[in-house]
Amino acid sequence: MPEGKTVSVRPGVTVLAAARQSGVHIPTRCGGKMGCLMCKVKLSEEESSHVLPPKEEERRKLGTLIDEGIRFSCQTVVHDHVQVEVPEDRLKAAVRRQLESARNRDREDFI
Image 1: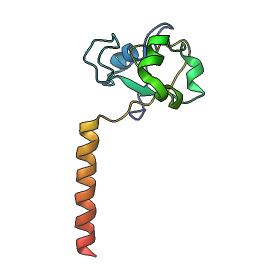
Image 2: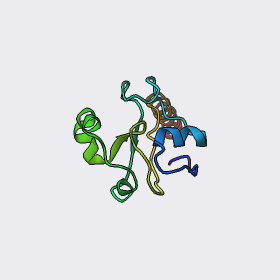
Image 3: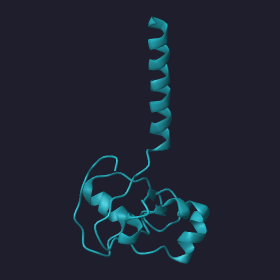
Image 4: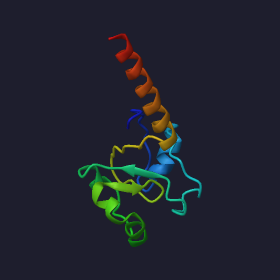
């Protein structure tokens, strides 16, 4: 999510690898080694049971974010059907907010 794409993969594949297979872009610089800390995804509490639990190093790097369902896609190993949310890229989100703000100001000028 939010792109609504679906991909079938074998158990044991990471969310990052599955995303790449389906054409969903998850930003990363380290190639899936948990070095850049960029490839965060969000899982609901129910979906968390469909992936392997985080290892200690991932827990340490994520801190309290892990309690909110945030995981590194390069470390999240699928073992059942799972739906993940890929957060919007920060730059794209900033541009989108700017455009929405400008549209809202234009609407207010016409009222």
